[in-house]
Each structure stands twice: as structure tokens, then as C-alpha cells.
Length: 206
Image 1: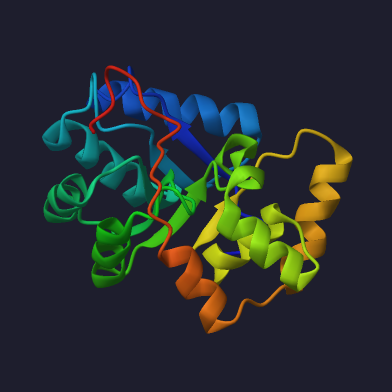
Image 2: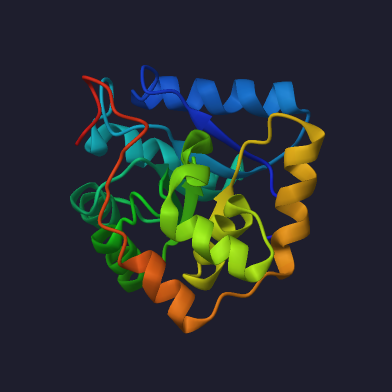
């Protein structure tokens, strides 16, 4: 993929075959591009039917409307099912992931399937600053807790899409790209026992 990747999603209420095609064409028109680099299935719920939804993604790839298929919020079981149906490779699965939701089983499955994990809410909606282990490592490294979170994800081989509420937060995130954690730092974060999921609703698959 190019250095700049254009990605968008098909919303969870538009996952019928024809709806996927229409959604992708509308997105391509609004973005003013010939090919969408990555098109995601937003959630495997509501109108999602793997036997109907996923062949539409294959069709879009065959027609050159999209270059790559992405998934979002897919569990290991959903991932396995999608892999059996899709002809196109799955390049990425975007999920909530951070030190309080480490997604160990999903990470292992994605490694097996050669699928890249992308972490949303990597800073736990600001609660990273309240995790003692992150604070201790941040103090030792002369970094912020946010930088430690993002460094931990990089060390795991995962990408992250943090949301920066202002320029100072964005600058802090960017300043931390050179931060390298020690094996001891990583093990300390891996051992965090507290668990918290931010993106949980009555209709999510977990």
C-alpha cells in the first residue's frame, strides 16, 4: 500500500449485497478517487450476513473499486468465518485495543491469518493516565502515558489510530514515535490485570 492510505467503512445497517456496492460507489464519489485503498466491514452485526456481505467486497475488489478488504470489530470466530468465505485476502482488522483490553487471542489469530491489527481507542479515552503501570513507566522513560501506550502497541506489531482532541495532544503523540520500551516495560504492561472495554453496547458481538 502507498504511504497515504484512504480507508472508509460500510456502516452496519448497509451490509446487504447491493447496499455494500452502493455504499462503496458513493464513498468513492465523495472522496473523489478511482479506487478506495481499504474498505471495512464496520461491525459483524445488524444487516451483516457473511454469505451476502463478503461476496460484495470480493466483487468490488475484482472491479477495481477497492484495493483491499478490511474488517472492524471482528472476533476470532468472525475472522475465521470471513476467511473461509472471502476470495480476497483480509489485510486488517480494526478493533478496540489498549493495555486494559489486550486482545491476546485475537492478536494470535490475526498473526496466524497474516492480518494486521489496528487499535482504536488506544489511549482508553484518556484513562491511560490513570493506569499505575503506565504512569510508572512514563516517569522512568521521561514520556507521557499516551506515548507509552502507543509504544507498547508498536512493540506488539500493531498500528494505532489515537484521537487527538487538540494540537498539544497530537504533538505529544507524534513526539513519542521514537520511544522504545524495554522487554521489562512490555512485560509489566502485559501483566496488567485490570480489564475495561470502552466500545460496548447492547448490539456488539461480545
